Image (cartoon, rainbow, N blue to C red):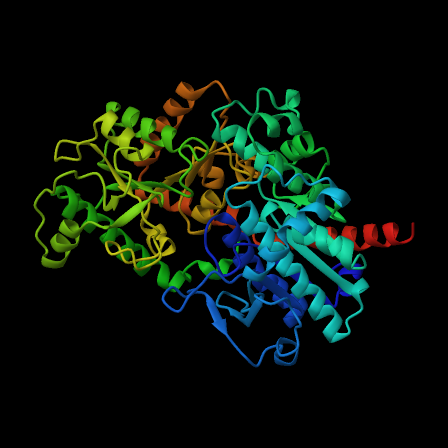
Length: 550
């Protein structure tokens, strides 16, 4: 630990995804926590939104009324701002504070006026989740200020770390009300960059020509963009997770961030003594569901490949994956290929007919044998629509079968009833053909579990592999394809070739590839990358000292 990090007496990290699994940021924080706790003990505190009810509790928050009990009894927070203190049920078991922030809406207009006057944050064009994110962020700032004051901690020995635009107004609030606290702001993906991609515009070929402010006006993103930009400029240290996103942030937000790559916590991976059994059980589940859905008897040596992640059809390369599986079918692979698309969408619950087939062990072919759960927007869902457009039929003659799993795999989905991590060991390969992927936890997780993966150089993890390894299955367990704005057809063909080649690999060679994947992951743990956070904290403390000296 750097000497300046040793001076930190309280470290706060605020995110919408603390005890609230939505996307990749949850994995960043939950896997990083153990390393931070090892360094800072109970002096690291995570703050998240209390969006839970008795009927829908957080599955990862364990309330403990004895923690910070004296402070909790004397918080003096505004009416309608309530807190619960406990532990985040993840490796390291860090202290977590959940904040109910309804009371912040009463002062919304006054606060937005202040943010405009002090930081030129344009809240006039706000819509969607803007008000909610800002209310939570401001409440989190009040919690931090309250703890620092109540405990008598020297604010010059406090670092407050805020993740994503949803917490940015909390950083700006602290900057104004308790400027002695050093602040860190991390953008995991710029709001305007994500919007450019989400609107089908080419990001990379024209990046140097884009002006963030003008694009925000064009795409009606003024509020989120101006808030994120203000936080980036007013944070004592501004960070992002990869060189890919650093270039994006520098161009669109106007400030070069420090790169703090994402690590992974090995505790999430089954121990070697349990891995073989975990793989066997996962494969059995994956094959049984496919059998019950399609009526096809998949042999034991079926090659199982999957893609997963957020439901962003273009950004996450779901379109490429489906078209690559179609191209793969035309190549007549040597083994049956079972391809899963594990992407939570607008799920209407598990299919009752599939549940019944699994419960009685009757494996007749079901209608629509390409999807495991119902959809509220069946005809409009892009993955479902493309599967049917291509014409995957998943019958006994299909050398490549594709199955869509539009549900969160949290162990209670009603079909698999295993978590994603519980199913991951059963895969033979993964594909993450990302167009927009600031880091890429999905390929990172895959290699940590010994599953070879295909990703792209537009993903931060893919670029990291290219910078540090030979990007071949044999050398690193990873194949990194060079995706651009204009090579869709080529990337589809390349990924089809990659899976075709992997499916033909002999068992002994595949064992070596799986070990190469684990070896790659072993160099990308939080123990390897946490020094970058030490640097961020030190830069924040130094910048804070410099601005207070003015």
